[in-house]
Image (tube, rainbow, N blue to C red):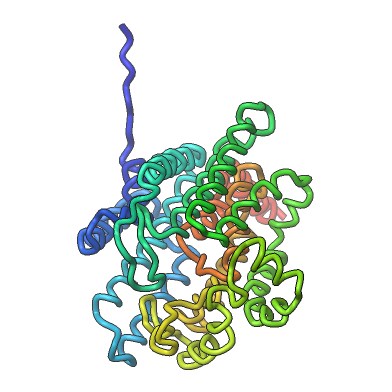
Length: 402
């Protein structure tokens, strides 16, 4: 009788540990979870130093520096910021660096599909578990949301988890989806599931964002290719930050009011968001314009008493890390798109990024779902990397002979 040998590498175990570190199971106490993150980041650093020497200096370091510097400055200038909050910022920056570098390491090793399949199946386990505990909140979240918490986060986190499953499935099986009907059916089942979950949680923003994969996937390839253009992504990022300040004029339109009030059954002030955009947001950003209020802060809560965050992806980044940190993340996003392979492998991540940007008009979506998609978009292809390296060597030889 033949025995099947299951070979698991340390790198795969590390991927699992990082996944659990960034997508928190909320049944873990906060202190235990933070200890796990510190240990995992430390192990990841040692692994990368040993295995990925050539890519240790990379663009993610700029983002990490902006996070840490902002938090340290806030600690020394604001009495309410604690040492624990600064340490949390350092650990978060460490996770950011390790995830970006490890994903790129797997790309250069020619193991892109192995990595993404691991992420997909981990995400699938999370989603199945979330479905089991769909109606069992674990408590009430304090901090940036003040919402009920389920096993893997609040209603937004859980809805985005199902959207990420769609993106990772497309990344894993993009070629087969276009060749075989059963894979295409499975894709639309997952899209439908992500829509249903967002509706069950009453998460209108996630519902609208979950529709985007179906819209993009039925469009011609040429339209999707335009979405990879660095100029296009830069324009979309900027527009999503400007739109909140234009919403007051947009919401006076009777047709828009009818959709929001009668179709979506929401308040015309977007559940209080208009108060944030018109009264509080710009003064909070202006108070610490250059370096922001730090990774963990109560700036919006202090200013408004009721609201806890900026309710916008990029603008929340401005609140946290200031204009300098905001500029750094915009440059990083454009850099990731410049490095993109623009293939079916990255199409799933492309869909996720634009879905998060759409939701980010009225929600805080510069989160791990957004960043993991960005990392995959910029993930190097071993064959392309070797070809470029070989061409550079040939070019240098030609110059020497000349």
